[in-house]
Image 1 (tube, rainbow, N blue to C red):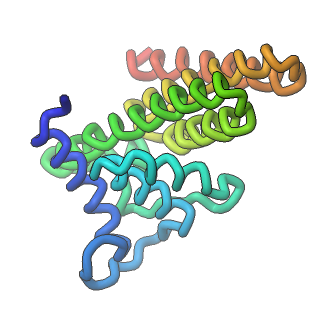
Image 2 (cartoon, one colour):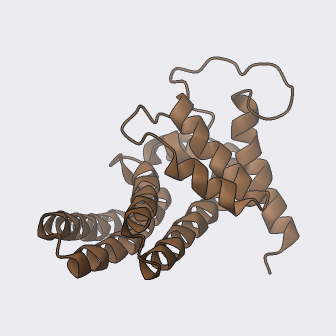
Amino acid sequence: MMDRRWRRTRSIAVGTCLAALGLAGCGSEAEPTSETTSSEAQKVLSAMQDWESGDERAAIETLLAMDWTADVRFGRDCPLFAMTESQCVALAADKRREVLDEVTSQLPICQEIGRECVALAQEARAAGDHARAETTLRAAVNLGQLLDRDADRMLIVRLSGIAVQRRALEELSSLYAARGEQGKLDETREHIHKIQEELREVKRVAAGQ
């Protein structure tokens, strides 16, 4: 069972983002930032908070209902999704540690949600609901891409995003192969190849090569 202190720390971290956006509690509105968080991005934060509060079903359903083609943009209040590696490095030591503590407390939430999406997709597939399986896996891929969509994102965040994507993409590949959907299978395999190349590049950068 997850240590309750660890769960609480992670809940506080996500809640901080939501509070800053005026989505948690009855506090005043957040101060404007140079880049505000969009409504679809707010849904991601809400799903993460639902997951941490124990309402895993609500978290997954929120992600499944999202419009992933819309503007999913995060403001500065959410370093997990908005801070670059260089910005993090440039912070004063105490502030950098604060940011890293927040980010490393939130990443497991995304990883857990991704794993649950894969598990739910496998259940749906076994029940013959291939459409539900595909939608659920796509949600996991999209969540992973939010962590990895910018080449200058924090390396630890990108690595987690790649891992979330890869698990879901491998399951999608299996689904498309079984259904004989060659076009989607080829596209998914290309995506897997792309993130494998990206993983090698991230590891190279992390090693200072």
